[in-house]
Length: 113
Image (cartoon, helix red, strand yellow):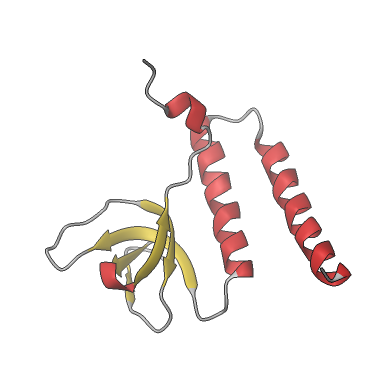
């Protein structure tokens, strides 16, 4: 592996771990919002420029929608529509390449027996 590539990955990892460390001790909503921002920024940096990363709702051809999705990778050259602000968009299901829900602590959210 090229030293330049290795250094780039190490720098990304360091930045992510630093951000993670800075959010320790905050409430779950703050943690979730901060980690959503970091995840979207990371995806925006590593994906080719033709892919857009955002958040919002996904709607399908039967008019079913997802509600809010934390991170959405939109297929290149597809359409999405702004909602009330630039922060969220309405995505057509066929235009979505991937969708992520970002959780701050999965262990505490799993169903306990």
